[in-house]
Image 1 (cartoon, rainbow, N blue to C red):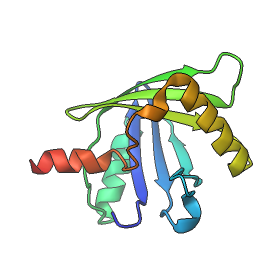
Image 2: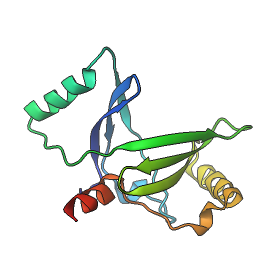
Image 3: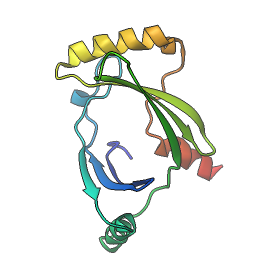
Length: 142
């Protein structure tokens, strides 16, 4: 929780994967709270592999923190393959927009991200920098 590190098993439609997101540090956050860090994804093949992966994590002694149920709609920029906007509907929590920019240069990425979010009118909305698990955990406590 403190380091915002994540190990998850994701299931959607016929796609299953394990994802690891490393701990967040001062180096992964810009002054404007843009997070840039790599993640490792392992695609699971075959039916019920997510169930097997969850069983493995249980046997290893990892404790499931929470279950996030999300419906995602993805919008791709019509002229730029490096820009996407996703709208996530989190069960019992609400709707969130996330702008994603793929770039090797963090400064260029931040500039493009700002431009896209201004064009879409997203700069006036509150920024939520917490992972979805945090509001889900808070909701479960209430």
